[in-house]
Length: 208
Image 1 (cartoon, one colour):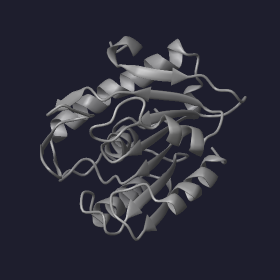
Image 2 (image 1 turned 135 degrees about the vertical axis):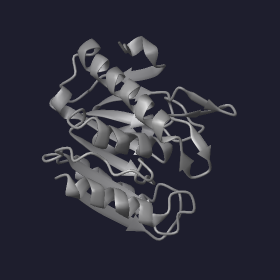
Image 3 (image 1 turned 120 degrees about the vertical axis):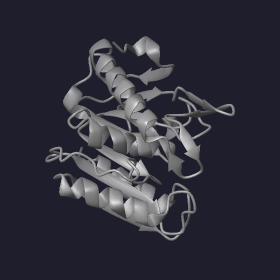
Image 4 (image 1 turned 180 degrees about the horizontal axis):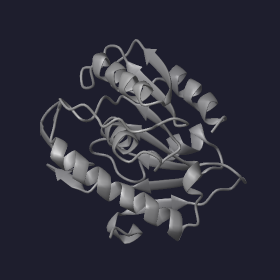
């Protein structure tokens, strides 16, 4: 059984009432401190829960293994997402969080594991803001889970060389087919957090 001790993490309590808890999922090579400023920007005063990915790829933290650039180890992704889901559930108990008010926020590799949480563990989070992420179960059709009531914001670059835009659009389609309310925001750049997209995401967060 996964506990909060199984992941190095940071928890920042909320400073405003009735806000969401933002589950921050960093990109490759980052850590649990990396997205704290993003969380504060997108959801001021919200509780922040920021774990560190447990996979070491040549000294870089990741959430799951990959076989090579752009090719995921899907079996490892499935196993690691289950472990992360267990951590989130344990953290909700440990930190007295409302499980219906947890929103994932991930960049790149973190967006991919966030998408896996949505598709493989429906209901674990109430929504997700995912940046530079794509369809995680490469070559596999996700189960027909019920994501009605789940809100998702996707920020993607049409010139992204790491996560091709067709993968981001495929993720949007997979989520919509399962009932999620998806807002797509595309920018002209690459694998980055675009300022205008972030401003749109901040507005999106006000309705969580």
